[in-house]
Length: 225
Image (spheres, rainbow, N blue to C red):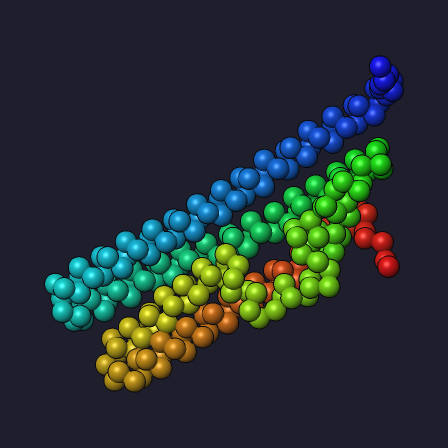
């Protein structure tokens, strides 16, 4: 019968403390995901309700002056809700990044206590940008693609941003109609409002992503080479 090696009480206590903090970070990330989905669902519910209400008003007013005034007001509320949702999603993404950094540091502590376990982990024990992206499943050589033009539209804030920009375009078109502009001017005004809103959202998202790395000082950076 193989005898187990004697346990070191000090090492066991350290592992217990690290594991407790690790589970705390995991629970926090779960709450972040729940709030992100809850925020998006709330925004979509408000948007859907507004569209249904406007459809009923359009039937009663035949797309008259009253419909235009009410539509601009209701869509402005939807626009504000969407902008606040995007802002909060960016904050939650930043918080999630910090949680991953913390988990990488704890993993580094595990390896300090038991370095023989390192070959069995696929996540990174380094808390710099490269190590954090590796834990998130993004390789270093493709990390620069995170800030590319097309990637911004497949993220949760980016997809909500397109919807919010569409609402902004609708407000611009309705405002032009309210001032008596012809159809082509209303379409042009809507397109300009959409492009301006989407550009602002995209620029804000890129700035947030670029600030992820420097926001937390790396204590265990990825070795070069």
